[in-house]
Length: 123
Image (cartoon, rainbow, N blue to C red; front, top):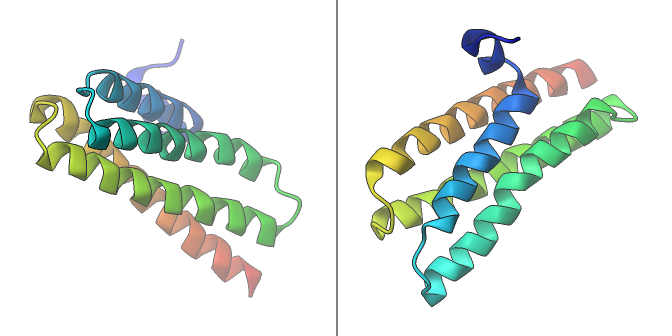
C-alpha cells in the first residue's frame, strides 16, 4: 500500500484526486445560471488533465508529448479561473476551496516545468 508521501508524487493519482475534490465542490454549488455554467465548465476542464496525462504517457513523439502536456497546462489554468470565480462569489466556504486552489497551483507549476523541459529536449 502506498504511503501518503509516496502518492503525492504520482501525477496520475494527484490528477484523479484533483477531479474528485472539484467534484465535491461543484456538487455543493447553488443552482444559479452562473454556478451551473461554472460547474459544467469546471467538470470539463478539471477532468481533461487526468485524461490527457494518460494520452501523454502514450505520446507518439516528443512533439506529441509536448502538445498534450500543453493542453493539460491550459486546462489546469482554466480550472483555476473557474475556481477563483466560485471563491469570489463565496458559493463555498474558503476552508473547502483553498486547499484545492493550492493543489491546482502546484499542478500548474509541475506541468509548466515539464513543458519547459520537454521543449528543451526538442532542440
